[in-house]
Amino acid sequence: MLVATYNINNINRRLPNLLSWLGARRPDVACLQELKCLDRDLPAAALAQAGYCAVRLGQRTWNGVAILARGTEPVLTRTALPGDDADQQSRYIEAAVAGVLIACIYAPNGNPQPGPKFDYKLAWLDRLQRHATRLRKSGAPVVLAGDFNVAPTELDIYPTKSWDDDALVQPESRAAFRKLVGRSWTDALRALHPEERVYTFWDYKRNRWARDAGLRLDHLLLTPDLSERLVAAGVDRDIRGLDGASDHAPAWIELRLRERV
Figure (cartoon, rainbow, N blue to C red):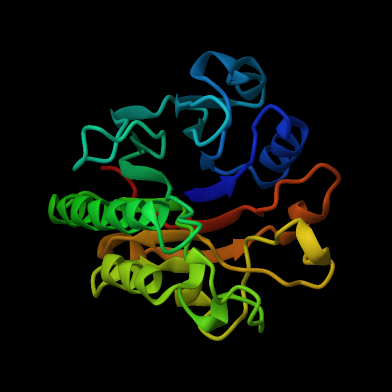
């Protein structure tokens, strides 16, 4: 089972890029973030023609998340992160696919910090940690996939001081990510590439793509049962270099699933 996460940064604008990647990589599940469209504007017909069914939670202008499944309908289980009924931002969707619970995540950016946006980011990550603990304790095999908007360590950002004041690398952000992962979840990319500078995001500014001045913001976290079945993990970084590309590249994992009796 191949599960991917891709911050598409406007699905309608990047649709040719998305369809080309889906055809080449053929993920069984693709979690998308930053749809930047309402539910009715999702290009469902084009996705269906490519072989994918979708559950989505859109939002005008910003945010928006979706889970695509190849050849099957995802079973929607949740459309909001619990813990704050007043939160109307479309950042979390959850569905079951082939016996695996998939959570698609678009965590808040948090800039500028300090300030209310950073406070919201930390509160949101705390809510995610509490919900993730409940999911793990349910005994279900779970993948938390998405743009967490945290570069967890210095290995996850190119050598620089220019981001020192950014919310993505603040000690509080990194501590929240460490608390989320804890001892029970496996950071799949880091588990298989423990010493490599693996990036998933290159800002459009300052020629950062050409300089490989990237950050690892997109993560796939696995419950212990799935971590034992992790076969491969990587980033399709060349997608970032295409014309009209998102500023993110897709990250993916391959899981060896047990055969059903």
